[in-house]
Image (cartoon, rainbow, N blue to C red; front, side, top):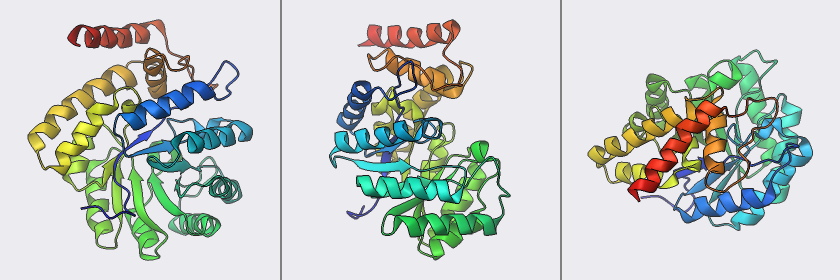
Length: 302
């Protein structure tokens, strides 16, 4: 049973449609937001890795945040991605989303120049929590982007200090996830599973929710997966997870960069042009053919 202040369920790390100049495509973005909300998801993560938040200019990053907040109108949870390369830059983003009206922000450790020590990370998260005031700060473990995992002990310490109640865990390391869920649970920390390959394991280990990038394309599969886990129907969990693994193989692993297939797939639904923000690779013809084949099979089965 979830309390009214709890965060849980399917939180989609929404992509950000952009035009040829890497500016937010407002109409496409609003359309995708409504499609996802209407599909029954519980929340949207704005400007994370899938949303290419760190790649946008400051002006476009703010536009993205304002458009999403306005279009949502309080219908689902909104997580604001505030990742950046220094304490000062991250704090400015936290203050900006607070000013817009967001209640939650997501934050990983700094990257590019970072020592990755526990002390450095505690200073960083503490300063950003102070900047956010009464906002919910959600820690984000994504070692493939920041160079090194956030130690389980550090995340538990953040929870002990009452700075966080939630962590988004995207390492894909099942043993790390299980340890974080178990030790974190002892200090009031709940964990979202952000890796689709290990999503069934994460739910079985007690994940409070899932954050799946392929849900941009096929959200109902993930809503059904989460509901099956909530009902402890693990036969159905395995059934839906097979579909999840198929989507990851075809959309994420079939091209030059994991995001290119997702953005192209969403464009085949009539949302945006499929472009990624420069200098990321664009979808190639081979990957288009793989994704178009999925669309054809869906059309035949409907």
